Amino acid sequence: MSKYLLLIDFISDLVSHDPMAGEIAARGVLANAGTVLAKARGAGVPVGHVRVAFSAPDLPEAPTRSPLFAQFKNLGVLQLGSPGVEFADEVAPAEGEAIILKHQISPFWKTILDAELEKHGVTELYLAGISTTLAISAAVREGHDRGLAVTVIEDACAAHSLAAHEAELGAFGVLCKVARAEDIDFTV
Image 1 (spheres, one colour):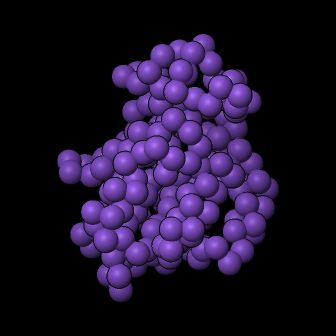
Image 2 (cartoon, rainbow, N blue to C red):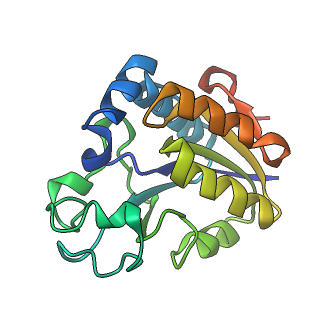
């Protein structure tokens, strides 16, 4: 079985503002994600880093009727080439690791992710990132539907509240495994 670690949306515009920043800090999410990233690198497991970003302030690539993306339009956030879409230091990409640009909630929709997973013959997908209720949730469902064994690293993920995070983990049901960073072992 071939494993792959996917780190989703650990970018400045999303991790540095409350309520997300508070949730991430309170639960040590970035530190836990960094721990898992180090384990993956140490085991030679390929890693992908996903960022949501757009080419202009009016988010031309976003779905036109999306209430989620509408709230970000013309705020100067999520702009390609800006410091806001740089990855958090704890999980910054290393040379050779894939950087996957997305314009939707899902890291799969019209991105290079499918090709990246196919290139590595991936059968097991490990997920860390934000938000549990949005991008992680989409990745769980789409990974499952692609026949992958999906593991969510729960303490390396966050939502706008702990209650929302925990509810979404519960909603995953039989779609994936949920584990803690300390229990991830990429060598087995």
